[in-house]
Image: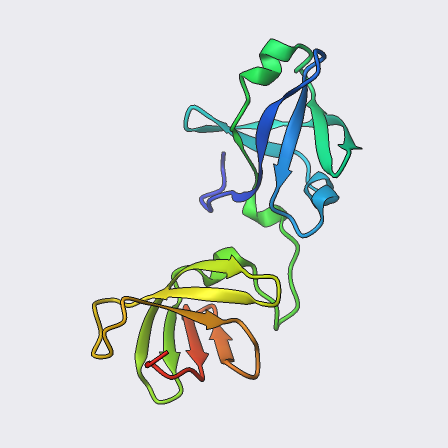
Length: 176
């Protein structure tokens, strides 16, 4: 891969489906079929990314299955089980100024409005009602917190996100 930026993981290949090389696909995109808006895919086999193209896909119940070009037997499909599916970062569409990809928030320093360093975003958890930042303290802080969960609710708790500086300003009490 020529890009220095890490590819963006969009899903994972599940088990084979049928005898003609079809695969069950687990997607991490907002809509199940959204993963098929991207082409070509990169799949990670034995630690290496390689490019593949989707020949066909369809819904199978609430799930999706796909057939990749060059994969026509159950054995070939089975060899791809558990491979991650990604796309080059430059394939991702630009978002409006007030929206962010989760991957861009990971590693941001979180400071509250009183200047207290809450720690670093480790991951974002989807809860149904709103996303939540899992913030790990840089060291056990004076409030005895190793990590905090801060709802990603703009204007209420999230005051400012500065991706260039990798900083997030929150209105959040360190006691929580």
